[in-house]
Length: 311
Image 1 (cartoon, one colour):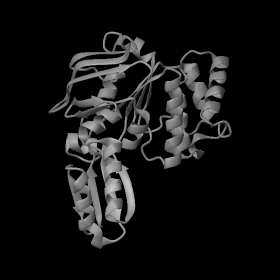
Image 2: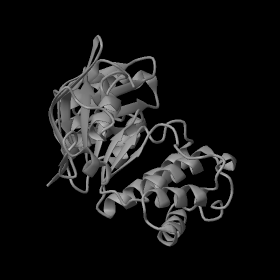
Image 3: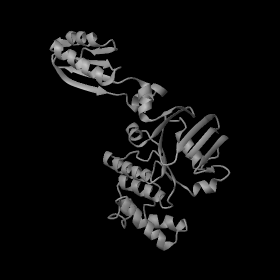
Image 4: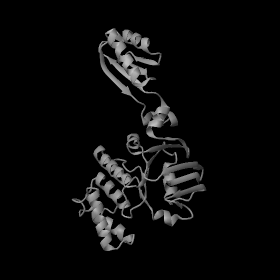
């Protein structure tokens, strides 16, 4: 069953067509990474799916409810964390969570219990009774994510949630998201960090000019971009011709040469067998290798190949 489904969604802002017939399907309990250059329509997609904007055309359902006709039911079942933590700096972390629980009519006792549970889950117990203005950026992000979970949403929207965070804080947030997905929460993630999408997303949709131009698992998209390549660095630059001759004896695959760095890159069409054949040929030729590494296309390569832009 799809927790999120959009069909032909369109949205226009004055002279700009933000969404041009966008289609999405996100199975329950999975993570979809939504990638695209600035202005591609990612944030507009999130705003439509979270009922903050009405689409001009098409249909979308979240958690089984129409985002236009049943907007209130959608809002009861979702959480949204944007690019900036939406918490009150003057309140403590605990007070922020209790306040949200009270506004959601959980009752004060249940709201306090939920706040305590979330502070523990996001490793904020020690800071729970300190004003949020004293929190680091990573702590605020974790509190913001905790605030989204007070209502126990079945679908969570994360719009560039780790922007500006240091690597340690980003990894802590990734761990929290993984834990949520393991508990059955569906996540739609927009991000400018491609390694984040690679780590978290079960599937990725690349958006450009308001429509999905490619979709698949990270590995599927990488395979479509190009084959694996074997990169070799030589100990002795004068052995470059011998290395090239040895490689050409065992494969007709494309081989590129960087004479300045004394490196070669061989396109691999036969997987492990191709690696072994090249290694044996170089050894027989007496070529000394400083570095021997298999390199696969990255999501950066996928992104540039599809959009012609770098993130």
